[in-house]
Length: 474
Image 1 (spheres, rainbow, N blue to C red):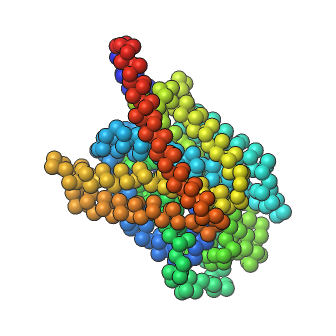
Image 2: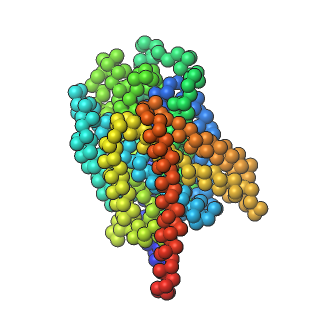
Image 3: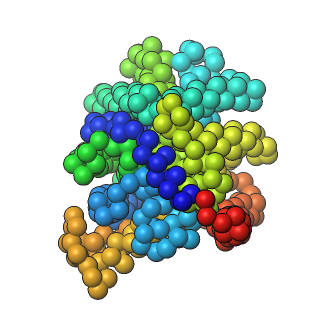
C-alpha cells in the first residue's frame, strides 16, 4: 500500500544528536540574546516578568516536553502530540503555527545578525546595518549557507548549533563580566523605581508575551525525536541543564543591559553590542567590542540554524500525512534529511526578509514580525498544556514520567500563562507608530495563517484523499 512509503523514508533519518549536543541545542534555541533588548527597553520591572514566566511557563513546559515525548516518541513533536491527544486537525494546526511562526522569526534573526556583525569590522561601520543592499546580501548569504549545511545533515548542521552555543556562552559571559566590573568600580545606575510597575503598563504587557516567546525551545529537540541518541535517557538531562542555564542567562543579561544603557536609549537590534561598547569605553577596553560582536554573530547564526532545522521537520511530517503536498516529505537519498521542507522554508523566509524593507522603520518592522511570531509560536503550547490536562483527567490515566497532580498543576499553570501571553502580544510595543496598522497586522495575520491551515487540512487534504480513492489501491 502507498501508506507504507512514509515509514520507509522516516527510517532513513539518522540519530546524530547526543546528550551534550541536546544541551547546546537548548541553550541556543531557548536563550536568544536578540530578544533581550526589546524586553529590557521596558525597564527593571521585566525582571519580575522573567521570574513569573520561568515559574509559570518555563518549568511546566519542561515537564510537558518530557512527559509527552515519553508517551509519544518519534518525529514531529508538537505536531505529533496534538494529533495523538486532540485529533488530526489540531495536530496539523499546532504544527502549522509552529512552522509558519519561524518563517517570520528567522528573518528577524537574520536582520539581527547583520546589525551585530557590522561591529566586527571595527568602529565606523555600524551604519552598514542601515544599508538595505548590504543587509539583503549578507542575510541571504548566511541563510543559504545554513540551508546547505542542514541539508547535509544534522551531523554537519549540529556543529553550527554547537558553535552558536559556544558563541552565546562567550558573549553572555563577556556582557555579565563587564557589568560586574562596572558595578564594582562605579556602582549601578539602576534604582528601585526601575522595578515598579509603570503608570502606563501597555508596553510592559507586550514584553511579557515576548518573554514567554523567548522561553520556548525545550520542545525543539523532540521535534527531531527520531534523530536523538537514547532519547529516554538524554532528553530529561538536556531539558534540566538547558533550562537552568538559559533562565540564569536571561536574567543576568537583562540586568546588565539596564546597568549599561538607559532603557530609553536601548536599540532593539543592536542593544547588546551597544551596551558592551558603552561599558568597554568606561574601563578602557574598547578592543573587546569586535571579538564580542564576532561571538554574538556566531550565537545568532546558531539560533537561525537551530530553528530552521527543527521547524522544517514539521512540514516534513505533515507532508507525509498528506495534509500538505507529499513531496514535502521527501528525504535526501544521500544525507537522509528532509531537504524539500528545508528548501521551501528557506524560500518563504527569504521573501519575508525582502518584505522587512517595505514601509516603516527597521525596528518597527522587527517588532511587528516578532509580535505576530509570538502569537503563532504560542498557539501550539495551548495544545501542549491542554494535552497534559486531558491525559491527567482521563478515566484510563496511567502514570508515565510524572504523577497526575504534577500534570494537572503544570497544565493549568502553563495553559493560563500561555493564553495571557497571547493576549498581551496584541498590545503594541513602544516602537510601534501606528496602532491601527499594528492591530490590522496582528489580527489579520493571525486569521490568515489559521485560515490557511484550515484550507490545507479540509480542502487540500480532502481533495487529495478523493483523488487517491479514485485511483484505487497501489
